[in-house]
Image (cartoon, rainbow, N blue to C red; front, top):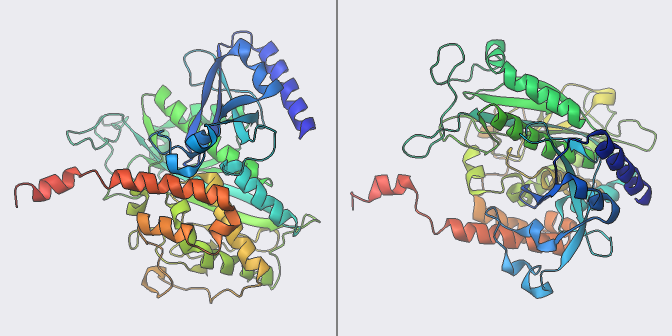
Length: 458
């Protein structure tokens, strides 16, 4: 770790020396909701991040979605709201080209004041579970796909976001035209700038497609043999998309279900595992995958109900889970079956993997991957046997339901015997307190739909 810190410090010196025009550096950590929180520093003060770390309150990783302290998590008044030390992550300083003033950024990870892992930090938690897999000579290879809407930034009279106007007709976009190259062409300026920003930041952005919703897109990151870097890149990609969109007068939203009657935004996670020799540990048994692969599948299915609040962490997240919506509602798996929670693509041999399809685009990539790692470990440690793969419509099966509801899912996680114990007492306590506080706040709000339906009737 000291060698890596020295390498990043030298990279930062070289970067700052080569960019004398730089004005600011943004330094941030990902909190448990996946919101980036940190500081903007004058460029001339940036080296202190790499020389001694950036001190931030440990409680920062556990604030709620509005940035309010969660007093019941044990990190605030109980400890005097003590600081941790945040250390820089690879690739170190990179340009954030969407800012008006020359600005760079670096992502951080929270440590205890003595430099030891602070396991309420979602990245540290994922690192710990990755170490447990590595102890079994298993090393995840991960690729993440995210969906998002590009919106105009304008709203109607009820506050509902509006889609952009067509470049060609001037009318608002009203349908998705899935995989249409013409729709990609209509947003070519945005995507040209996005690919350039990703290249500048070392993000391996792969394909982009128009999805089923109007001005809805999916972008894919290339597979990454380091699961932590895969999560880092997903976080950084989302920031780049939002930054480039704003630069072009658009609002990019990863909200799970911004429109109740239109497709939601998912985050699909492809994963295989390598053994110590670099071979795919899931390969074997012809086209079906070997016993280890089936044990991982079984563990993921058993852990899914306890993991739902990690895959669907917000009030709006639960609107995604509707019948025949491409958001799975049953804990099931199948070969080349996109109605199942876990799809096994036809690729075999060195490319044998699963696609985990439950999480929304609003989920924290670190926690989503940590939940998958915990489920995989559960299946591996017990040599579980997977149920039969489903064929046909998984929505019509009697497999366990995933659409538990927000409050019920939070308690299922807190009381669970698989995922919360794998996360440990600290992370589970802080996350549960965070969700309970958000749920409590949401229950005090009455929606416009309720006023419109009931106010004059009764």
